Length: 84
Image 1 (tube, rainbow, N blue to C red):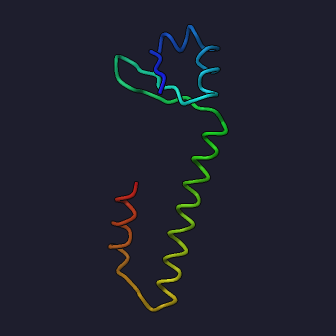
Image 2: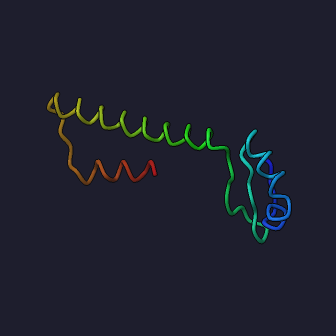
């Protein structure tokens, strides 16, 4: 991943945007990673993956309910939180 400092990102904004079209760009502030800039296509792909993962979990849950395999709600939410 390419990295720019916050100051470089500000002064070389056009270059940073051009690079972000090809791969994500990390922007650091005070030497620490702060944000990532990416193409809209990459962002949309990530959002679609997140949505598909949620749909898969929901489908598994429905299948478990239909098969009579019920679980305590707190256990289920604890598992979901581990994935976040």
